[in-house]
Amino acid sequence: MKQIYLDNAATTRMKKEVLDSMKVYLDYEFANPNANYPFAKKSQKAINEARNNMADLIGAKADEIYFTSGGSESDNWAIKTIAENYKDKGCHMITSLIEHHAVLNTMKWLEKIGFEVTYVKPQKNGIVAVEDISKAIRNDTILISIMTANNEIGTIQPIKEIGALARKNKILFHTDAVQAVGHIPIDVKKMKIDLLSASGHKFYGPKGVGFLYVRSGVKISSFIHGGGQEYGLRAGTYNVPGIVGMGEAARLELNNDSTGNTIELRNRMIKRILEEIPETSLNGDNEKRLPNNVNICFGQIDSESILAMLGASGICASAGSACTSGDPEPSHVLLSIGLNKTQARSSIRLTLSDDNTIEDVDYTVDELKKIITMLKK
Ligand SMILES: *Cc1c(COP(=O)(O)O)cnc(C)c1O
Image (cartoon, rainbow, N blue to C red; front, side, top):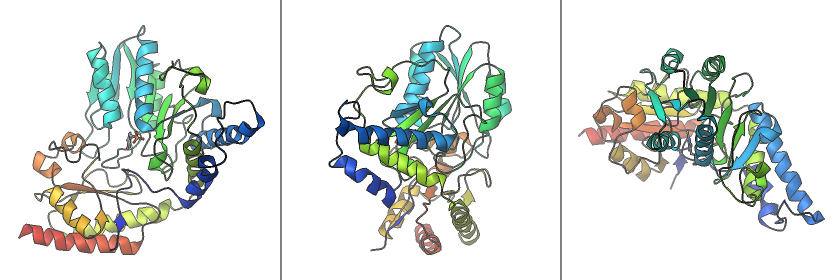
């Protein structure tokens, strides 16, 4: 049976070059890079190269990159370590209602231990207004954490403006850039980003590896206590194959010019759905949107039924974030941009990769048309 994978916001398939780059480190180059014998030299060198590639991808310096186990760990580390190291200055943080649960649930945990958090509501288009963040700033605000791009509706946030606002007010700025790194240009210096989270498996790298960028000068402390890896701040024997694979994925994305093609496919899919299927609407902004993200509300029809029938046609899509699917509560992101519960439960997300073709897009829209007609009966 045909299989069309349109759930690339949940995870991506590793590119062939990525898999190839990892193989020797899963096999005979297995030395612990911290060892002193010559056998460890190749893995040491590979880790350094990967670190340089990550730094190049976001305009950072290599010694500002800390390897982690993925996006969730990077978000936890960033937010908790700022709470720990800057609490003398204040106990207030600002974030948005559309963040990933790795940020939202970290913030909720901080509230339990005495911090105060303002959750800024996005506008109807899914973009957080800089002015609303500005209004939330207090004398005791120590951190603003706003995602670069949303994982459900793909909206790209005004990161440069938020960075400038934070810097002007001497507040640190963290961004969960897990959906953005490797997909849209990021420059931590120009955007005045102090901390940034990323994850390998969202840009054609392996799962279980990510990184946290921390601008030099920002005070952070150890998140995983143990050995001396990552300047003594993140203990644990290096995941050499994972780090090498993510480094290769970063190198490929630095030289990747397929964005224009992905945008064309995305726009074709959106246009055809909105024109050919009645009562549909696009969730999130038209333009300030990730190149690969389509999120459609079908009005009344339950998304679980649509997804099941798409699955039977060989199409993999999802309703919002994977972490909440199977959960009876509708998406917090869709509710926060003003959809009611029925509309939120009637929305699906289709996210493209570099591998998808115009045939994939057309087949998916044709199947969707049939499915919606059937479900309406
Ligand atoms: C996937 C995702 C995460 C979590 O990353 P993991 O590497 O799976 O832990 C965090 N934030 C966003 C926006 C994501 O899309």
